Image (cartoon, rainbow, N blue to C red):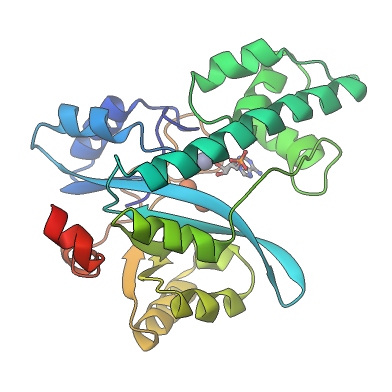
Length: 277
Ligand code: AMP
Ligand code: ZN
Ligand code: FE
Ligand code: FE
């Protein structure tokens, strides 16, 4: 339910992701790249009915929760990938990523850590530019021992080469996903660090909570499932797999949810969307 491909910062193409998912014995997958739905069509085409492909997107937002700024990731499922409202906003977010990447590369240069912006773009392959792409260029240039180290020393929040970018609020991400006919799920709530974010999102129509996640312990997963039920939300889960070679991430199939989760999400789609498809 939560996979990244080369359409954003994953290492497998959408077609390769489909094959890996079939090998893992999955009956369906959610393609949830950062700020793009560009991988969905290829995944659907190469699946050719062998596995269900749920169109999705992951939008990284920021919010102040109890006076602390937090990273809040919102997953959109069953979105209309051709929605002009969605396409326009994702385009704006991708432009902001491009500008931020340029400023990070400039900042690295002032730290005597010169990486080629052209190479960073090449690694990203035309998709939304993420810090993992810059980290990889740094490793290639011998400026960091690993992608993880590049984040820990330079690129992470509060580190010397960290740069802000334009982001949505989580509430606006939920509204955008609904406007595109989809349903909104709060990704990996355990990584946010403050459950106070959940109630305000329920108030704007949040549809689900990603209770099952590789970095959630058994108790945490249970607690979020109970919290979801109390708020009338769908209990979802996902591996957040980024493909082989991506540091610190689970593999495809590491987290599995019943097929019925898709149906539970589908019935929550905005009424107009249900009529349209
Ligand atoms: P960005 O999209 O540029 O904000 O970068 C966020 C992405 O970088 C996340 O979705 C992860 O895939 C990856 N990421 C975040 N922190 C780390 C880290 N410490 N090590 C490796 N990858 C990370
Ligand atoms: Zn990612
Ligand atoms: Fe995320
Ligand atoms: Fe993710």
